[in-house]
Length: 411
Image (tube, rainbow, N blue to C red; front, side):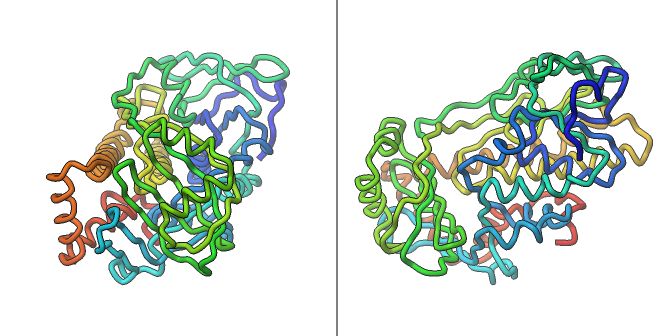
C-alpha cells in the first residue's frame, strides 16, 4: 500500500473503484476485496496518524467478528478487545432482568468491544502489502462527475488538485456524507430528543464479561466491557440533561454515574472524558445509482441502543464486496445500476429492520406511560420464559438473522 503524491495520478489512470472515506467501514470494504484483482483508491481526509486518534469503542457482533475473520484480520484484533459471554437487559428497578447466555446460541462469546485504533490499525496493516490498493490522503473530494462508463473525481490535496477516473465511487464518508449530497440522494428519518454521553471508566469488579443494556425513562445506558477492567459506556438522556452531565466536573460526574449504576461495577473512575453527540435515525432514499454506492453511515444511521451502528456498516461492506467480486468474475461492469441494485436489494431491507428495531426499543422503554410500562414488562417476562423468542431476539442482536455474506460463512 503506497502513499500517493500528485504526479502519480492523472485522469488517464482509471481505478475499478474509489472509496471515499478511509474509516473502519471503507477500509473493511477494501480489505474484503484485497484478493479480488480490482484496483482500489481510498480517499481519506485525515493523515494516517490522525485517522487513528478517535476516543471511541464499538460493539462488534458475532457476524462482524466472522466477517473480519473471513477477511483475515480477526487474529490481529482479538487479543486487544473486550469479550462478553453474557448480556443483561433490565428495565429500571424491575427485579427480573433478561439474561442472555452463550448456551442460548451455542457460541463461545456473545459479542466483542473494540476500540477504534485497534480495529482500524489492523485493517490498515492488512492492506499495507497490497499493490492493488492506493491511498490518497490527506485529501478531500471537490466534485464528482458521473458519466455513462466511468466517474471523474476531482480531489484537493495540499499540493493542489488532481483528477482520477473510476468505474465506481463508494460513499463511505459518514452520516454527513458529501458524496451522498453531491449525488443529490435524499434521506428520510428524524433526530431524537436525546443525546448520548460516551466515555470510558475503570471499575472495581474484576474480569467483567457482561454487557449491560439498562433502560430508564430518560433513555438507555449501554455498558460494554473492555480489557483492563474498563468499560465503554454510552449514556443516553434528553439533550439538556445530557449536556449538563457532560459539563460536570469529574467528581460530580462519577457520583451521578455510580448512582445510576447502582453498584453493578463497584466503585469506578473516569479514564476517558465524556463526549457528547446527538442521535438520529436516517435511511437514504436509495443506496445506489449508476457508478455510485453508499455504505455505512452514509447510507443509514440508527439509535445506538443495542450497539448496531458499526455492525450494519461492516455488513454493508461485506455484502457489497461479494456483489462486486461476483460481478467482476462474470465479466460485468461493476459500476452499472444492474449490478449495484443487487447490493441495495440485499442490504436496504435488512438495515430497515434494525433501524425499526432500535427505534422501537428506545421509544418503548424511554417513557413512564403505564400501558407501555405494563406491555414491555410482559414482553420481558415472555423473553425470559419463552426460549425461542429469546433466541430469536439474540440472533437479531448478534447479526445471525438475515442473509450472511459468503466471507462470513466459515465462522
